[in-house]
Image (cartoon, rainbow, N blue to C red):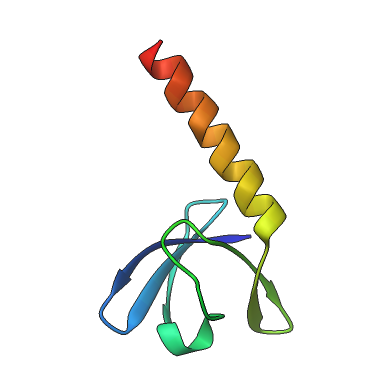
Length: 69
């Protein structure tokens, strides 16, 4: 699983679950990707995983709620 951390010009900085980062060309990503998008790498191609992304966003939302409660 890879998460788009940020964009730097024509590059996307991706981070995996272990915290390792990889820079890839924006052109190699599916259309509509943004910072926070969750991607899986299948046969060398990045594909979005909307279910994992939603799960991650909900978890982060709960963590924020706990932090500010």
